[in-house]
Image 1 (cartoon, rainbow, N blue to C red):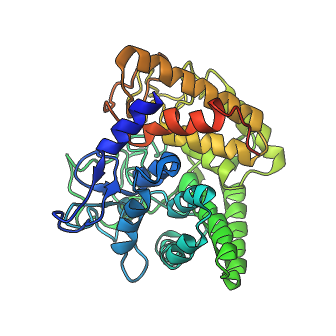
Image 2 (cartoon, rainbow, N blue to C red):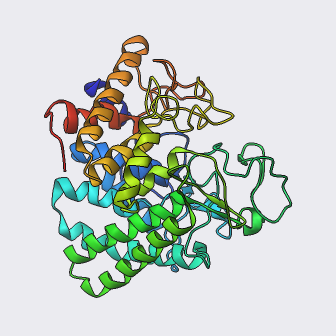
Amino acid sequence: MYAHALSLAKRNIRGGENEPVFKRPYVDAAFNGDIFLWDTCFIACYAKFHMDELPIANALDNFYALQDTDGYICRQYTRSGQPMWPKSHPVSINPPLLAFAELELYGHTQDIARLAQVYPALKRNFEYLVCAWQQDDDLFCNDAFGSGMDNIPRYPGGWQDDGKGIRQANLHPELYVYDGLSPLWNIQGRAVDMSAQMALLANHLIEIAQLTHHTADVAGYRKFHAKTKAAINALCWNEADGFYYDLGYGKQIRRKHVGMFWTLLADIVPDERLQPMLRHLTDPRQFWRAFPVASFPADETGFSPEGGYWLGSVWTPTNYMIIKGLQRCGQSLLATELARHYYWCVAQVYKDTRTFWENYAPDALRQGSQAKADFCGWTAIAPITLRNEFIEHKSVHA
């Protein structure tokens, strides 16, 4: 599996002198001809082991080179370097994981010069996102499609679209045109995942600022993290259910999805709330299905045992996020259990199909009902990263 994954990833090296914008070779998700932000950030999680063969730094640099002066970075650019989505709408942003990706690389290279080079771009992007998308309750709105989890229901049950807030349907570019859409499209929503990801970004910027002697910035990041953590815990935690929920028009939307587990990695969950969260994660009636972890739990209306894209499919980036979050919370044994179980499931499907898939079915050892084949892509995290970190070395990281 390892050799095949590396071979597929090397096929996805693009760029060169004949390209209109991207002149240096870079490793890509090869989803289509565009470059995608959160795909690239998760590619870093396995390309870090083979940086001599997989030019991941160049892939990340493509986004910095296209950054607007105010710090904005679009989640998707065309081959000609044009942003795919309107800047005025939260569909244009992805989970802000560039600092996460840079620290994944730094853990292997110890290249402080690289961190010093990219820190100004990371700081400007953080400041842009705070200015553009943080709301008066200290939480962040985002777009269902922009969150990366395209068709996860993020609206209240029975909601009828009033044209001023949360949409009942998630839009797809093949069917709809986003140009000119007002941010009111979903400005009334508050996303736990985006809010936690911004807190995670602040934590990562603290680490990078300390390493690169920008210590004057650290206090501001710490203050931001504290306020965001307090807001998520005050407004999004449901004590009766023992889980976090997104908000809509100021009320909790009692729908569970995998995005809530970003709170683990972002140091959002207080000690007394950790075990209730883990009970949901490890419950076979919810997220911990035959092929863990389901993106949408089986006890929610609309769950698809075959996957249904984000209506249950198992995705490598969210699994790796959960594994890292468990390590962060001192749950190393559970992190190892999940990593090895997921690796084994991917291996069984590989034996049957001789390839890797964009996602997998939660209730069977097969690919998801809507999944690209030969996807490396972030799925190479399973055969490369999990093997290196949990199988070959049998290590349990703190």
